[in-house]
Length: 323
Image 1 (cartoon, one colour):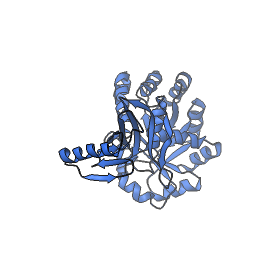
Image 2 (image 1 turned 60 degrees about the vertical axis):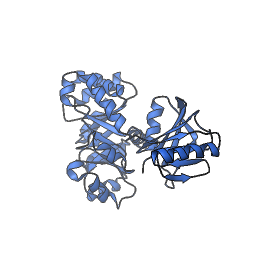
Image 3 (image 1 turned 90 degrees about the vertical axis):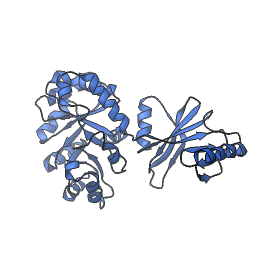
Image 4 (image 1 turned 45 degrees about the vertical axis):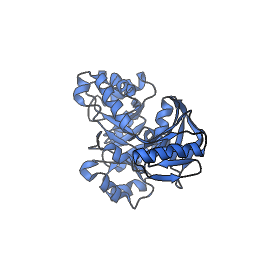
């Protein structure tokens, strides 16, 4: 169960940390998150409303991966799980809480910000940990330095993460997801401004992928036609030949001039993302499949490229991992 929950969190890439003061706000709040393409939430136990909020969400909202955060005691773990929480998050490393969760098979990501915390977690067999408070502990640079000796450990940084810095965290392959609350501010929740929360959430989920245009592929019937277009691009856009391969000529990095018409009526659009796996999961949630035969991986098994099973405006589309 733990692996499945953490895998799903990794596919989403962002965990909103929500603080609910009044249980009546719980259901409309998570529906606002879902409307913004975010099907996961961590309800913090910082308020007395947490347990009841989790109960209401679990009873009324489908397809929501629900967890409990700021869990400090075994008793809180029991209450959260009984209410419907599927994972537990704690700000620090409490051996009693961790031991109970591991024994009961409850997914838990305890908070750490030093090597001793990582080694404590390893003693309990945990491989995914919360890095908290992330920015105040030195940010990504600190995390990379600290994690270097621990090859099998991944992290969910929380604390100071926002729209502007989350993509830099998510670009590192040891980051499962990031946690934050900027899309669910307390004043909007208390004011019932759930449409605004949906808007902020949609912007956040879009930014998770760090998507950017990699290149445009242009189809041609043969190599001679492709060379003619390449020469034009070289001349008028002052582009240097990047690579002349068996199937295509790269004019700079922006144009892939195809020597055939294999994919897409007119060509293809390459989109760079920080994780092809995470991008695929996002499209699958929207009902768009992947052409499995197009997936390419590196030596470590990380996806480098995959084509979506769609054609839009005469173009095929593929996701590519950014360096």
